[in-house]
Image 1 (tube, rainbow, N blue to C red):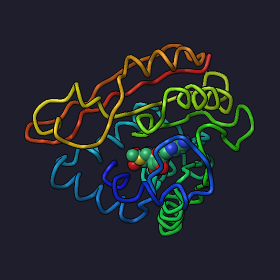
Image 2: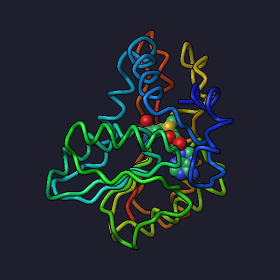
Image 3: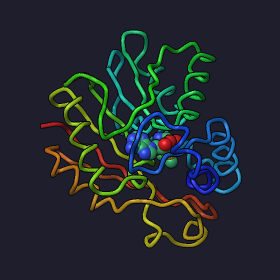
Length: 229
Ligand SMILES: C[S@@+](CC[C@H](N)C(=O)[O-])C[C@H]1O[C@@H](n2cnc3c(N)ncnc32)[C@H](O)[C@@H]1O
């Protein structure tokens, strides 16, 4: 969430072991605390619902290999690790060192062997054709277009043939209404994202939307699911 970017962005780059033109968040436990506060009092539980829906959109199966790019503090990866079970494997990367430290401590607390690494979408430290599913949630709006292209090419490289890419991101500010229009976090045009995903060689694109409920400041979310062709 961008609230951390405001407070932490100036120091975040220094704290990170990886160089990126993306907007790094480095709140760690503060990211989770602010997220909980926003979800409880502003979003009326829709952020949590968004994570559940993201995992559902991916149609995760037991035994699958999954990567969460820009995993933040690892909440989605932890949910997904339960779904793939002990026969599967989950990895998460983020350039924010505090994000990764928090993700590792949460996974350890839940006794889940998730491989959280400091890393950037521009250069994924995994061999070709490793994963059945790659996620990117609420992070595409952190990247300039050139890095989105580079990152999508990297995702295509590490996905197995027919592997699924699932992107979720907030709606652009211009497309929001009511309380959601005043919420500070940025977002993406789903049409623009879908075009980039196609350009990166993905096929069978499907898009979904999650709208804010009444009185919620939740910015609304778009999902893109696509298959490596
Ligand atoms: C709003 S957070 C979303 C985190 C998590 N996916 C979630 O849904 O809670 C965006 C994340 O993208 C990360 N990020 C920024 N630039 C990145 C890059 N080049 N590669 C990978 N992740 C990046 C940030 O550090 C931040 O943790």
